[in-house]
Image (tube, rainbow, N blue to C red; front, side, top):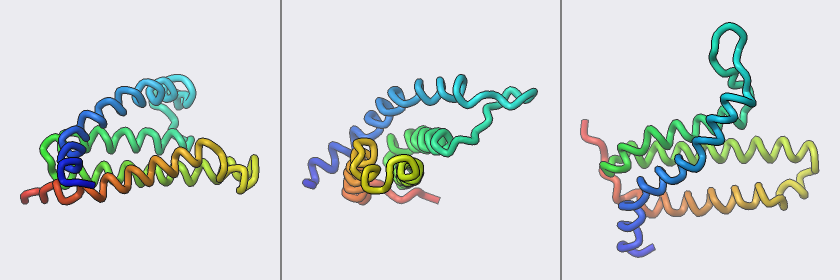
Length: 139
């Protein structure tokens, strides 16, 4: 990746995160409100589904990273990296679940798994390329 491309990605990454949050937040909020259910008497959602826990974790990490990405702080880069680690865990869970239903070979060839693997590989490549452009946090 060229220096100009790294600079462009670093400058526009916070806005890409905003767009992704705008796209992913409504379905996750809907799932929390409708599908997960509410623990009796508490009014809080019962987060027992691993896919829901990872989705909420991913979005929370992205939200926490956003102001730091705008300031090009290393902490923002680290939070975004951890959000991709959460997506990796979510993908592994998806593989486990689908393997029990369809078998390993069919699961690894499925569109969802292939797209997740490609997305994670591209995200890891881009994050590693732009890492030097994020300054260390000052103590």
